Image (cartoon, rainbow, N blue to C red; front, side):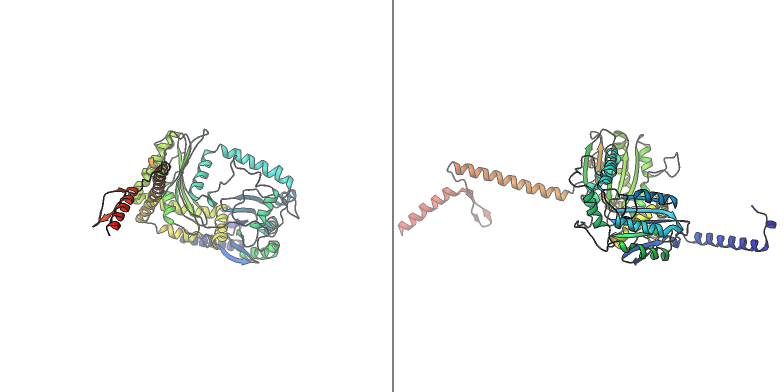
Length: 518
């Protein structure tokens, strides 16, 4: 710490001004829990949807988010840059490059120093418009990595259970596996030409968004307009992307596995397009992840696992553009998983009955707000959420609106939300020892709609009855017999059942007699 006498009068004045501005900045931050730098500014630049926010830090994050996920890896070479050149140039500038995909978006991301935005904007534009999909890279790099991911997934019961839950909940679209399993046939569907065709359908201005965090709108708009001219305006491929709204179905799936035990209890959750603050608070109330190291915590799932040693449980709301999945993931020994699932189901029922205390509700609201703000500040998840929001719904996911809606959650709203989940159709996925892992009905959850079940059963029973009657008729016809019967109705009452053939013969005799008498 420098002494005051070591500073000149001008330096003292500058230090005093700097200290005052810092104090004013701290006071401004304290007065508002959500800084304005958390909000994204959107614009259409050269046909590209651009969203940016300036956190005024020394580094910048830039990402291209494309709608829908390709089950493939991004190949490294472009028309003007080899993979080696891209890596060397990024290292010289101190930048980091990454590519990953979710169930509905492909993200190509760059992290770099703030002043290097021209280079990395140009690089991202080249990657999505000029990538070369070569045969040797597909066989030597992509296939090899894909098989390694398949082997890893085959032994991960937690990932298998989560994939199964998505498949049961959404069927196609969001229900597709994040990575193809080892039993998935890929040979006839996946090659370098198929990837190039798919990239031509995905990488165009109408299907991507450019998201910047840590850059001014003026700078990002300037370089986007200059370098994204090479990106096609529409699809250049014969491949057609299937885009339809997600539908929640629910149900149950059980798979035997020897590598461990995992159970997922899931319900309709909150989406980017329709945010449900009650679901966010319910997720925080269930918890599962400790806030302090070496402490299990006092959340509902923490208490449930403490009664079943060897089990781990956590609640997560998987948020997508037009759907969400509130999933409770439990893993451990089969007995402990079953015990934890029973405790969790009972806890959900108690929440639906309105037994949540005021203290627990206050803690859950605070935790939900912290999780939302922390995710928005971390960079990776906020780029993905903003980009997915733009390409799917036309606007980014704004954290200020989220926190404001969370503040409005009351005990009655939480009770109503929990009751609606339990009254609806749940999604249950069990992987492991199926002799011990519970069924949905054993937990008191509805995995089959009673009305649908009764309707199908009634139709099936009518078909069986009709076929049995037809069998009797066919047999009678083969014997030369007619066993058709009828009954006359008189005064609202059904008369005696008579054989149709006998009745016709009697009627003919009666008619002949009456005719003869005449």
